[in-house]
Length: 251
Ligand code: BTN
Image 1 (cartoon, rainbow, N blue to C red):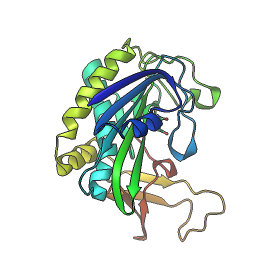
Image 2 (cartoon, rainbow, N blue to C red):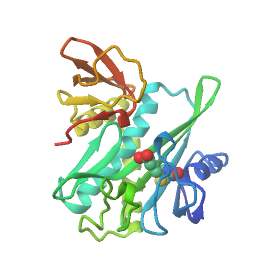
Image 3 (cartoon, rainbow, N blue to C red):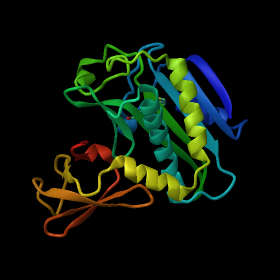
């Protein structure tokens, strides 16, 4: 794996895509991103040098199944969670469907890491995958909109340098990449620990649905392509693929 460390770039995901033209597998980091982005067109916030902004880029020479593509996302969040647990020795970290990492700060679970996976296609063939990972390491000042929802290793009381976290993460990610699809799926399912939990679905305004917005669903099954099947008391099943549309208890 070729590793590129930048001081300031637009987004490590974009640079990983470019650098994949000359490499099979790359890792790109930046001390600052001027256009760091999150899922659902959100901006990913990070002050200069405080956090890990990292993207792995992987070219595919063979046909990739949907299961394999879902696997890449799981590998990212599993690598982050495992590094956090091994570095801190604490079990305060949780995966939130599908691949956010939250930490318990003594009062609440708050977001510590997020993953943005982007794939490139030629026709129906996926030719590359970019796994962009943001981890709040040293950040102490979040914008007001997210200050109640986000945390960092520093705010949790752990003094880990960004470089150290980066090295640990690259090693862990590389190890997990070697594992089979089924092993990764099982690990992800175990770490998510969502099956049987009550799920509240957040409906967007004017969204037409054939269930009541107050309905409580139960997480029934994780599909191997990463989607979540939930069911209500009337037996109505819904398939979820966007973690931002559900709420549940992480404990
Ligand atoms: C999310 O939770 O919304 C996903 C956040 C992903 C942020 C990372 S930081 C490195 C990479 N580059 C980006 O522009 N985004 C991802």
